[in-house]
Amino acid sequence: MVLALIIGDFNIPHRAVDVPAAFRKLLVPGKIHVVLCTGNLTMADTAEWLRSIAPEAYFVKGELDTVAHPLSRTIAIGDLRVGLVHGHALVPIDDTETLAIAARQLDVDVLVTGATGAVDCFELEGKLFVNPGSVTGTGGTAARPATAAADAMAPSFVLLDVQGAKVDVYVYQLVNGEVKIIKLGYAKPGVAAADGAAGAAPPADAAAGEGGAAATVGAA
Image (tube, rainbow, N blue to C red; front, top):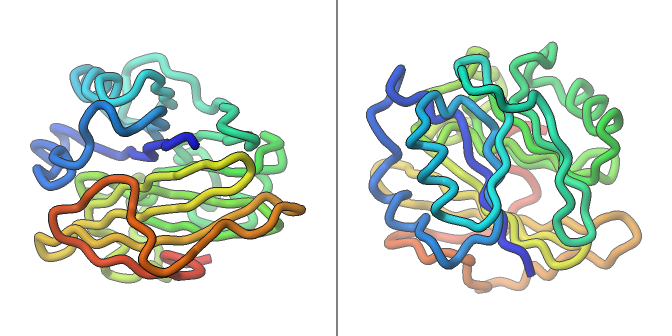
């Protein structure tokens, strides 16, 4: 089992002062194995904080970043190839076909993007697409997608519990001061679906939250 933190679009200090305290309380060393950051860190100490959480951390460059991170990268996690891009260069930025093309070009099973500021997880063409939204809830490169629910723009991050070619996806959102958790499942084509048994505990304890199974978060 590999626990991966998907996080990005901090926009500190341009649009936010800090990561919400409720999230910092959850994201502590010793639980997470790898961090995938979608960019727009904007401050070096934010990157150092992420590196302190997990033994491995990977970054891509957002349009607000000055550090020379790559624009895209591919990481092997379990039996999956995971692509990581910020997404500000994708046009249209929140279009599912654009994302599908990017996933095919990178030849990945999972594509992680940011830029929109809206959390969004869905499956298309046998691939998993994950946008963790903005961890500070400060939006992204694009205007809010017209199809995004109001809660999709709340501060958010995603945890992937990777077991071989199966993934349990946990979406964490801070809504009205309360951490809410939604669980989804994905399995690489040809592999039995990930176990989505009701009542399964999320991999990081929330001080206050509610879980539930869902097919998508945000718009597909």
